[in-house]
Amino acid sequence: MEKPVLSVENLSLDFHLRTHILHAVRDVSFELHRGRTLALVGESGSGKSVTARSLMRIVDKPGLMVGGRIILRAEGNETDLAQLASNSAEVRAVRGARIGLIFQEPMSSLSPVHTIGSQIDEVVRLHSKLDKRAARARTVELLGQVEIPNPAEMADRYTFEFSGGMRQRAMIAMALACNPDILIADEPTTALDVTTQAEILDLIKRLQTERGMAMLLITHDMGVVAEVADDVAVMRFGRIVETGTVDEIFHAPQHAYTQRLLASTLKLEQPADARAEAVVTPQPILTLKDLTKVYGGAKGFLGTKKFALKAVDDVSLVLHAGENLGVVGDLVLARPR
Ligand SMILES: Nc1ncnc2c1ncn2[C@@H]1O[C@H](COP(=O)(O)OP(=O)(O)OP(=O)(O)O)[C@@H](O)[C@H]1O
Ligand SMILES: [Mg+2]
Image 1 (cartoon, rainbow, N blue to C red):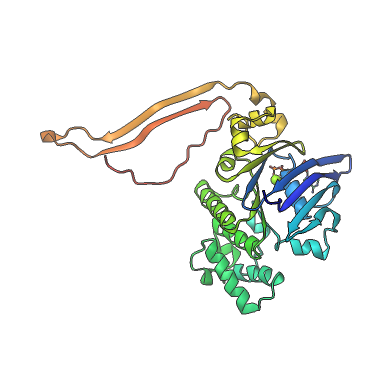
Image 2 (cartoon, helix red, strand yellow):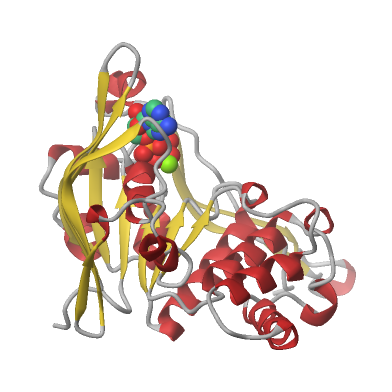
């Protein structure tokens, strides 16, 4: 196998708080390979975002890297990002150009006072020698690649004129502006409605595959992991407790925490303590089995069969105590039978 494009080795990071030292990331190791997606999963506060931000050396104060290596490989060269100053020219060159970042809230990375196009132009020009006109052509091309309709015209619009999904697309375009080798996506779809989430996720996955990028995907959603990831790292209390392929993690989870994570009652959004009791075997309080509902279809006057509509077709589900079960779907016109 080709050498990983990024190797994180025994990374540790502390926050020096007023009353104590918080060990946010502890001895974390993983590898990112071209064309593959590693999902980093774990409950809220487990250290996923801090780990991701460490790779770009953008951890907020008072965060301090206390150990480990972050080896970035390109054309036979190896650079240890952990050894470089976070504001050094080398690290700035890596951000955006080698590693692109997409996160949950596009508003915090998009300026409200500049057009979308001018912001992407700026990123393009920062890392290339393109002139203004060529940079704009590249911006329009990128907006097209993230499936923004009429990209040339939309480039002149402001952030507030874009919907949530379109802002996320614009941020993806910005992250891809310099053809990075690595894409970090930190909960990229959490703030979007369910249908838009699926579209954006499809887009990210398609771009990652087409461009052969290595992706680090942070998510709470094991459904997303199953759909998008090749490998999984499970994080808890700052440590990676289990790593494996998606198949291994879903079918033969070794660590008790991973097993609980996969049990439907465990809600990653809740902090660990609040969940301690939820781990007991859940009791179903509602069970639907093979439910079907048909409207119409009875024999009418003179024995002609009337129009029938199958509104519910063989639906089964179980609702456990303490569980939130979401039923989602698209608006489709049911076909008459
Ligand atoms: N700037 C900061 N100052 C102090 N502590 C911080 C800071 N940023 C993060 N932390 C702490 O580091 C720990 C890990 O945070 P992190 O944001 O990585 O969690 P996460 O796994 O991404 O959670 P979530 O799923 O909620 O996004 C948490 O305990 C958090 O409170
Ligand atoms: Mg986070």
